Image (cartoon, rainbow, N blue to C red; front, top):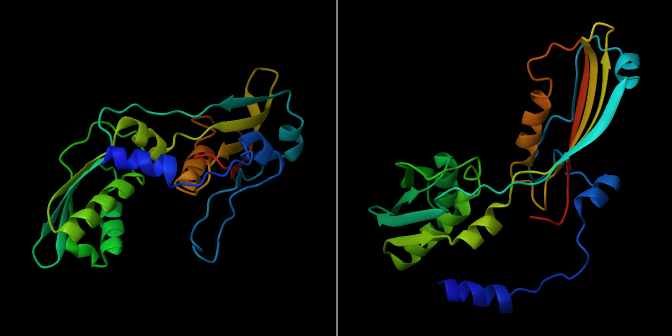
Length: 239
């Protein structure tokens, strides 16, 4: 199976050799992932939050300002994506898979097989690390395994090698941030404005909820009387 995968990667895929659109360039061009598309009207995220009563003059005239960037992260969890799929009675399927979202694996596999959701049973005993990487990416492994088991009508075990697992799962989002802060004479934080930009790569995946979490928790445990934050997910040609 690995030899076939290497052959397909090297001989059956036409790679686009054009210069990829990288994070900084896409951000300057304001190439952001659009919201409320016709194909998925519920795909939205919080673009900005402003505390009621915020005085723009205070946050825009901040005494301290700057920029900060964080790179992407890959998490080396011990167990790669893997699934055991077993065809069961009455056109049903049992999946033993490493996932953080059993309902997602269930519905995606059912859709791929053309059966009802309740005809797919997903079981998880434990998993060797997650870090959020198994929330949506594990569906690709479990669905492929389910299709193979369905076609061959026999149990199938699909275990990703480490390199393929890293490529398939992407990474944690790189972020750029700009900030302005204002303090009172006794050192109390009076105002804060933050502008977040995340590298969402080439697909939506979970970039919107990740940005929502960043936006909603940016003020941490502080009560800042003048507070504004914006967040945009940048579209690039990266994973």
